[in-house]
Image (spheres, rainbow, N blue to C red):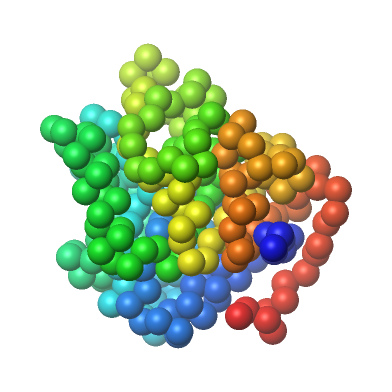
Length: 256
């Protein structure tokens, strides 16, 4: 089954629709297990989710959350860490019980053990019900860089130059930028029951095209999503610009 692709006018429209999808899943299962990413792409979505929470449209009090990746060596209180990002943009604004928040620790003494235990935590929670993903310009999902095997699990990975440049070029010098990270694996992602991938901006257009129009291959890790039966891809017009087949519209009447 091909991923469902919906093209929107802008990021704000995507955010509203994405929150409707999340709400729909919460209505089905109050103790939803969520996989959540970081990055500029999802900031508007988290802002919209906070708004929905404040208006009592969504209830996340029973939700379990797993973050997708983390830089090795960065402490949670460092502004560049993904734990800091999620706390700042979401968890300090939506009160989810601390016991339900799961962060993979890039400061763990034994990184291999940390990865193994993180996989076990996901399995103990019953797996990810709804996985939210962004996509890198090189096609990475979470921090599964090009070349990542489709059967990969949570592990340590060396970051590509393009990823470091995109994430740290304007903040750090690339010399100071973390060179390694921990990430959930592609197989871990594919085992999620439902997946939503969001991409905005022309910088992501090539990766989106390869994800959807090339045969699944490890050069574009996101192309593995073609092997999943329930994937929805939300794009703005810039990110969808290179697609051969474009489907505009927001089918709000059919969220199931």
